[in-house]
Length: 130
Length: 47
Image (cartoon, rainbow over all chains, first blue to last red; front, side):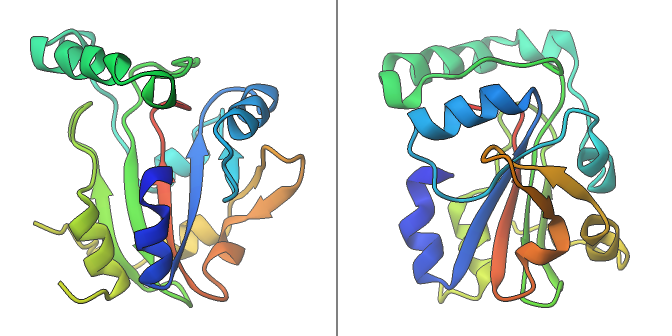
């Protein structure tokens, strides 16, 4: 998401990210990756439940396509390597675009470990011309 | 294909949640979209 910050800012949006784990790890991660947007910690998964983010299965995590995707990311070097998985390794993610005032323009709840919201959908949710 | 929520209570549910931030502050999620649009990413892991 950090890599797309310029496009998202150009479309008038900000970024906030929520992860699991402890605050000290989040702080170290933010410093190491030079993350300037809010990075929040939800180890109790309260907000994950609110957006109805699901959980993947262990078998799904070990599917060749997922493993290959992880290896590819690792091969791209330090800036793209995966960080510590944390205490909820089977938790799936989600991406939402909320317009000022709370209108939900995109609700992308990942269906599996590779199902991240495409940038085009995010920008469309922000109202950027397609 | 964009997936748009049909859940009218989603923003309100999120807005009521307060979480600690990496910088040591505490953030009410509703503050995030009070002034401008926001992309709210739930990460599977940091990294």
